[in-house]
Image 1 (cartoon, helix red, strand yellow):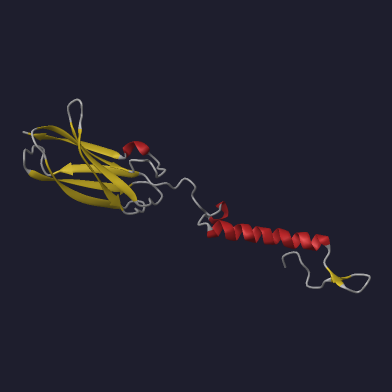
Image 2: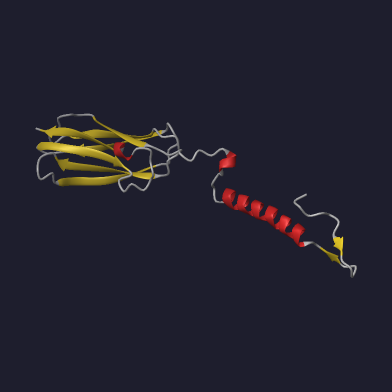
Length: 166
């Protein structure tokens, strides 16, 4: 088994020895098993184990508000992050920004929320209270803002709504 016979060859002096051929055959099998153990130990599946190399997450955000018009009144925004991809997503961040909707689009508030790891089809939702003054405001939720997670589609990580403060 493994290319090494159980019966060693006898040399002319009567001492046991392995032939180079048997030694190389044994090393080849050992190298294969070391390679296999290293691959499995690193958490990677080889093609022989049926891994899907294209399985990647796809994080999609949706953003809703309890009010479309809010002036000096507290209202809630609800953010939902869903993994519509074929692979699991690690923990990520969702960045919420509130800007003036008119030029120069000044940033008024920014905060982040940790999003737990999501399996394919899984979602995570959270709500946050906001209070705005007069004007038109754009509220945006962006998941994975620094693009650390390789996804199937990077263009659907952001969702925005406008709220009027009258």
